[in-house]
Every structure is written in C-alpha cells, then in structure tokens.
Length: 193
Image 1 (tube, rainbow, N blue to C red):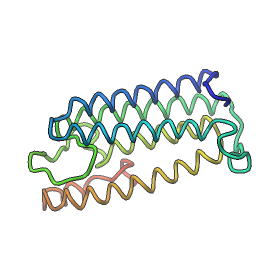
Image 2 (tube, helix red, strand yellow):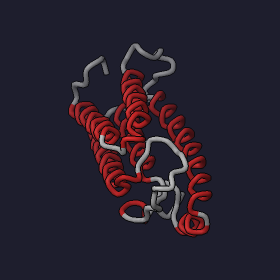
Image 3 (cartoon, rainbow, N blue to C red):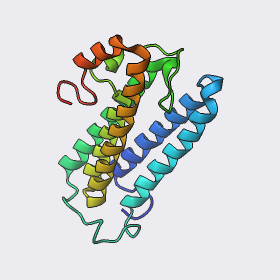
Image 4 (cartoon, helix red, strand yellow):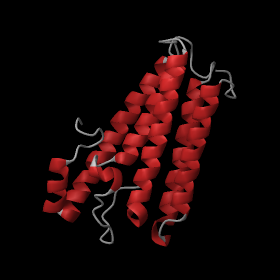
C-alpha cells in the first residue's frame, strides 16, 4: 500500500473504519452532557489510533524488516478480510445501540447506569471490544503484514486490561447481579473466551 487505498478491499476497509469513527464521534457528541467532553476527547484519541493504524500499514512508514509481508494478498484473503471488517463494524454498532445512554468512553462508577444484558450483551460482556478486534483482525488479514499482527496483539492486550478494569467497577456497582451475568457470559468471544 502506498498512501491512498487503491484496491477494492483497501477501499472497503478504509470506508468501514471511517464509518466506525463517524459513528463513534456522533455517539460521543450525543452522550449525556456530563460525559460529553470526556467522550469527545476519547473519540479524538480513537481517531488518532485508527489513522495511526493505517499509517503503519503504509509502505515506508515502518521499516521493511518489521513490515514484512507474511502472506500474499489473494482473493480469498481479501474476501475474508471484507467479511471480518464488516462483521466487526456491525457488532460494534449493534453493541453501541444496545447500550444506549449507558455508553461511556471510560470506565467509571455511574449510578445512573443499568446492567445491559440485551443484544450482543447476551453473548459477550464486551461486544464493542469484540467488534473493534474483529475489524483489526480483518484489516491485518487484508494487508498480510507483520505490523498488523503486532497491532492486533497490542489491541487485544490493551482491551483485555480495559475490560478487567471495567469488570471490577461493574462488580462493585452491580454486585451479585454482575457476578451471575459474568458466570454465564463470555468476555469477548461467544462460547469460548
């Protein structure tokens, strides 16, 4: 990839990430007034992270020793990448809509929140993270570069730590209700993890 995406899969993935960011920013702007500044600031960080992700995939940004091609771009890899990125985007939007006014960009105690157990929250406790990770996985598959695997690993580690912090707060806030929900619902991958 050299700068602007030119292949159909690169264009599709870029458009999906733009849709992700637009939805994220619009959600932050429409958040409750008390949360609005924090959500907009976090949205700007999210935009910077996604733009950084695409810059890392660009040839010349990362040395070729680190940005080595692990697998060639085939029609099967491109189709799989498109399906993963679209699936991740749909999971993210579904999760965000299911949260409604309970959404916040940062983990914090909030006595106005409800314990959401509808939509994708029936299957996993952190579907927004699942959707994001599926999109990163699809993007890494499309480009087939080592840096994509590194970004996926860092994303998994970072979101796992954030999920653990959120779960600690949710356990304090909802007590046995959250412990019971946690015991029957996987963290990020339905029926597995």
